[in-house]
Every structure is written in C-alpha cells, then in structure tokens.
Amino acid sequence: MTDRGQVRSHNEDSGGIFYKENGQLLAVIADGMGGHQAGDVASNMATSYIRDKWGQVDGFTSPEQAEDWVGKVIEETNKSIYDHSLDKEECKGMGTTVVIALCTKEFFTIGHIGDSRCYFLDQHGFNQVTEDHSLVNALVQSGQITKEEAKQHPRKNVVLKALGTEANVESDVETRSWETGDKLLLCTDGLTDKVSDSEIHEYMKGLFDGLESTSQQLVDLANERGGEDNVSLIIIEHDLTEKEGEDSC
Image 1: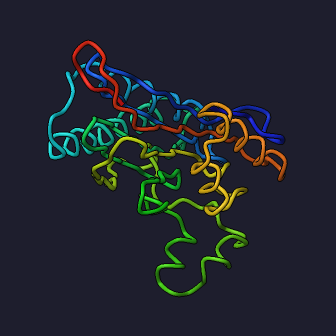
Image 2 (image 1 turned 90 degrees about the vertical axis):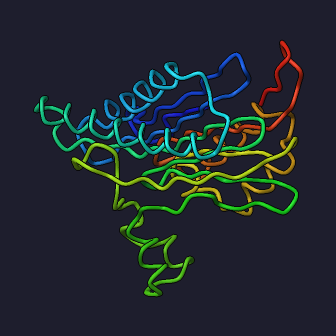
C-alpha cells in the first residue's frame, strides 16, 4: 500500500510483491530521495530492475544462495541507477532507499540500503531487522544523541547511503528463519516518522480486520499526524498452505 501523503505533490515511493509458482515471493519498497531530482525515477527503476532479476531465477533453497543473490542484485541495481543519472542531466543526483524481503517457507532474507525499514514479529516479540543508514542513527550509535533526541533532530532525514548516488554501495543482508503466523513489515520513513515502534507493534500484533485493513489504518494514522512524506508499506504473514504440492508464504 502506498499513499502520496498530505503535503507532497507526487509520490516518490515505489514497491511491489512478486510471487513464484513455488510459493516464494520477493517484496520491495523503495523511497526516492527527497530533495534530489527524479526521486520517483530512481525508486521506480529500483523496483523494476529487481522485479526483472527475480523473474530470471527459479527460487532459492538455502540462505547462502538467497543472501548472495540479494547482495548482487542490490549492487547491480545501484549501478543501473547511477549510470542512468550520469546519462540524463535531468536525473543527476537522483537516489533511492531500498529494502528487499526474499521469502521462502523456511526463511526470509532481508537486504537494504538507506532508512526504509523491515520489522519482524514472532512469538518472541517485535523488532527492527534493519539498521538505518542515516545521520541520526550514526549519532545514536556513537552515543552523541539519544533515540528520543533523534526523533526531533533537524537532520533526521539525512541518509548516509542510498542507491544510485555513488558508483559502488555496500548493502546490509541478513537471513532469519520463520514459522506460520510470523509477520514482516517493510516500510518507508513516511510511516516510521509518524508512528512509533510500539504503536506499529500493536497494529501488527492485532492485524485488525486483516492485512489490508491494518495497512490502511497505519497509512491513515501517519496522514492524520501530518503526512508530510509519502507513506508506503508491505505486510507479509507467513501462512503455510498446500498449493499444487508446494508450501507457500
């Protein structure tokens, strides 16, 4: 689900969920860089490139294979966007965040660049899988400011790494196992700037009226609190069902 928000004239977010017949899926969220030219071009290029590469593979049987593919596809996507920005003057300086979830019935692999996030909810609790590549997070990690101060910091939206802004970029990639009933949330900072982790946890835990309704309620909450940014999110619930002899997410 994606929404322009209450202030922006257009939506620079992009994303999608792409399924395979064996039940594996790939989810992508990309947030075109605010303040850069052609942020929507960058985010759409990221989603399209990753979707096309996903269509060229049969799927994955091990975390090692998945992590290798996710790391490489982010690297290739970065080069594609960077080269495009050099070729097109109107796209000079464009960039985008990206967070990818490659989901099989046994595990999920997350890759990301920037401050779009992935959260995971299972029987042990709710936690953020990704670590923001942002200025304020670097300041928090170094002890210069607290997490509470980070929320109000005047440069809280400054991203230290993004796709397409440099020739080479290194992504963070991680794999975890999951079980039926576990849930993933991928989202842009348009959501997390307005809705706290504890509030997101409550919505994810309850999944009020289903996935679509819960997604809409989260978007509405961000908009009610100002909606200065585009808001995009994907919720995935692990649901093992028999389909054509295969388990599916």
